[in-house]
Image (tube, rainbow, N blue to C red; front, side, top):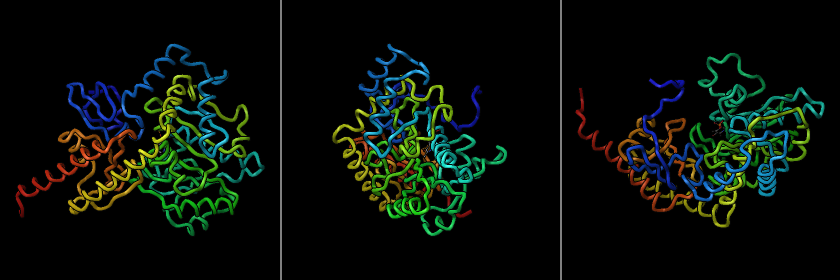
Length: 399
Ligand SMILES: *Cc1c(COP(=O)(O)O)cnc(C)c1O
């Protein structure tokens, strides 16, 4: 019996080491990783550049607190500002904390402007923003809210896709619109470019802030540095995490100067956020993600994966309902229960994947994945579908 909280239905599988897109179990068995620790290991496992950066940082100062200047953090912040819409960055340890900072930044912006009554955020069903009290309220998933007392007020939820409904929901209390450009946990649903542009236009028209949650879909995963780049718009605030640390806990809230300017000393803080080890690794991740050709590679592999999954859907129409996602945040809605199918892929095919809402099988390979890896993974999924067919043929019918 484990000493740990039972919050996860964990597999007993434990990994000893990893290399690129492969993980090796304690008994030496190799697994193909199309999971990436849920979209975190952007550069796969044991990337030599990241390992060297962490080892070098470990010989220096591990932790110092944000009451001192942290050169690695200054550098990472400067580089993120240069590569995005943002002028200012707050570093966190996780995605939920990046969202907390984003929500607080939006509310505080209007407070500082003398409009404290503007604190409501328009959010969307099917979202996932984290597991803190604030972010479960923002996500609005009833299953995650139940049992934890009254939800934090100030969030309304609409089905994504309907700009007219969004405009109707805007009132004198509204401060921002919060959305994942590609919903991850909720079912790998990519917003259309028209909807994203429409939200930006509504924010401009009504003086609201646009907050993007790019914790899962950002940092190269869709084939652009950030997913909103596909629609040609920019947000006012953006939450980032997962891929940013390549496996080291790190997150960030990015904002424009206009919005960030109210966050003066005393208005926010984090003991560990932007710590030297995390930011040394973060800088090494950025070296790779922004290197010439890297995002083109992700885009090509994303198209390759989509094409291969399309062929799979044609071959197994009884199991594949539809294709979803963008780039290397790919989903297929399937008919067999996704939990069992993820287990089957892991157990029988040694392929690691992740389920998502709406019975979607989520494929999240490291961004360094090759064409051969994609062929192999899709072949394994095909073998698992064929095994289901075979079992169905053997199963007694009727009574
Ligand atoms: C994972 C995730 C979060 C929460 O990140 P944590 O690091 O688990 O707190 C928030 N938003 C999205 C879109 C995510 O995928």
